[in-house]
Image 1 (cartoon, protein in one colour):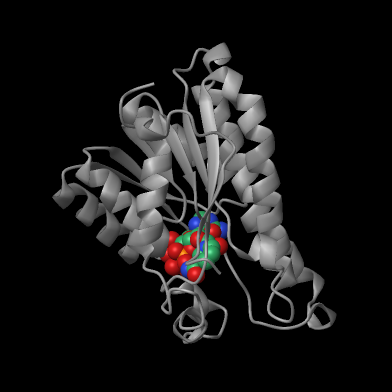
Image 2 (spheres, protein in one colour):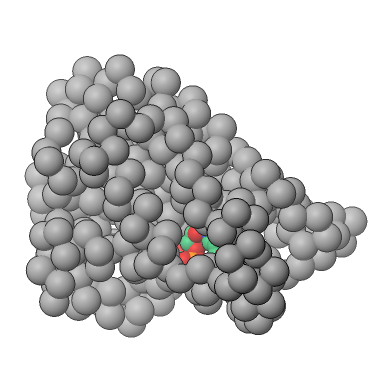
Length: 251
Ligand code: NAP
C-alpha cells in the first residue's frame, strides 16, 4: 500500500463529513472520487475545494443503494485513475423522529437500502479491486457508523440505529476477512455533528441542543470526524484493524 492513500472514493462527499474528509485528503494530494446522489452543485463545490487544496477530484453521481450506480462509480474512477487505494463508506440518511410503531415499511426499506446495502455494495467493489489475492495492492476502508449503534436511538430512529449496528458488524467481519488480503477495515462512530443531516430528519437544531448536553458541552464539527477518518486511512494507523472509533465527545 502507498504511504498515504492516493485514490480514495468517498460516498456522500458533496456535503458534511464526506466533504470535510475529501478536502483534507485533497490537502495530502489525493485523487478523490466525490460521490453524491442529488446535489450536484454541492458536489462541484467539494470538487473545487479538493482541487484548490492540492488534490484531484472526480464527480461520481449515483445512489449507493443502486448496484448499477455503484458499479458505474467504481468503473469511472478506475478509468480515470487506474486503481482505488481506499474507500470511505460515508453516505447515510436519517428520517423524521418517531417511535417504531409509526414507521412504514417504505421508510424502513430505504433506511436499510442506503445505510446497509449501500455500504456493503461499496465495500464489495473496493474489496474486489484492492484485495491482494485478486491482484490488488491492498488498501483501507473506513465505514462511517454512528454512536446511535450503541445508544439505540429510542423514540427517534431505531431503524437508523439498527442500520449503523449492521455497519459496525460489517466492519468487524470485514476486518477479519480482508486483513489477510491487505485491506484494513475500521469505522468511526460520530456523535452529534453539525451537518445538514439533522435538518433532513426535520430537526435542524438537534446537534446544537443535544451537543450541549455531552461531556464536552458542544456539538462536533465535520472536520473533527474527518481528521479521525483520514488518520484511519493513513499508514499512521497501520496496525489498527476492526476498530470502532467513537468521535462523540464521550456521549
Ligand atoms: P449530510 O450532511 O446529510 O450529507 C449526506 C451525504 O450523503 C450527502 O453528500 C448526500 O448527497 C449523500 N447521500 C445521501 N444519500 C445518498 C445515497 N443514497 N447515495 C449516495 N449518496 C447519498 O450527512 P452527514 O452528517 O455528513 O453524514 C455523513 C455520515 O455520517 C452518515 O453516514 C451519517 O449517518 C453519519 N453520522 C452523522 C452524524 C451527525 O451528527 N451529522 C452522527 C453520526 C453519524 P447529496 O448532497 O447529493 O444529497
